[in-house]
Length: 371
Image 1: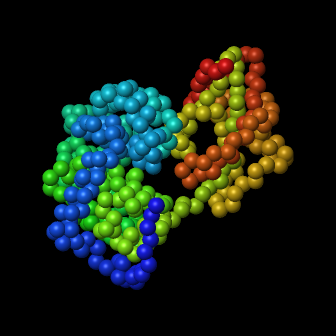
Image 2: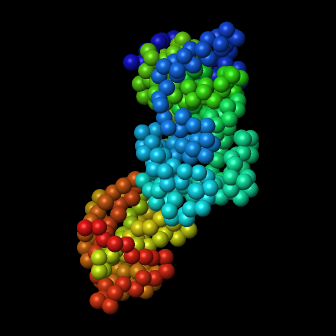
Image 3: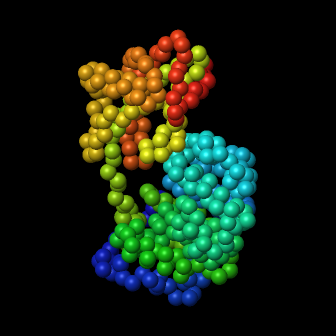
């Protein structure tokens, strides 16, 4: 359970100069010692913590973006088994990589990872750069990921700020403004560097991330289990529920997509999304977005006349895109799902083609039906 105390200072007091944490040398040593001892007892045994291989570490950190540790572990194991080295990944086909990534979402991460692997093989003889500044020049690798690779693989004294440590640092400091703003980021990165020891900084960074991820959680932080609670300004002032300031939620876009489920001789017709489309490069049933709105949730049950119009638009799309003359019936299924900032209502129509066979056009293929 979390503990709360009264007597809140003013915002100006809470947000006083955070370029320094305000601890004396003894307090800083105590913080480092208590956190390190706690991590030695309670740190989770995760596969990417058992290696100093920058490829495996980089892979794990990219997978962990927007994804939980529990969800990542099986994907990490399968991906490493399929692409055990950066050279193996660099030699892979993009579709092969996307298939291995399937289910993790945010597929741009997989594409950037492939581009990075190829650049490392072509420009760095297959060896990851050690310098975080150089790592940041690689596709999809920002400041946190670059510092994490350098710190965990090479024990470089490179501070880390990601979702877990952002929350932890904000509470330790009692920082009540937006930690994701430019000013907030400057405060937190400076703080992260100031508390980092010169000895075993990589292990200490892991401990910070672990504390933020398992104890200093977003809701109901386990303050009674925190090894550094007595140095936490948010705990002292009873502000754990208010710090950090909540991120502004992105405005959601509602989509209605219609798709054609066309089966012929045991195969289904699939289409590859174009580079300019959402979820570019992925394969799915031939589809068309027929409605897009922001701020207004779409109707749960579209009227029959809309379904008729959309069925006709989909048939026209199939004729223009794939050269198919298809008779559509249905809808046969309706699904709702959310992905990133989209709420999608997917309406599937069954499609029949002539006995002469499916005229597979560009950006399309057939896939064996699963029975």
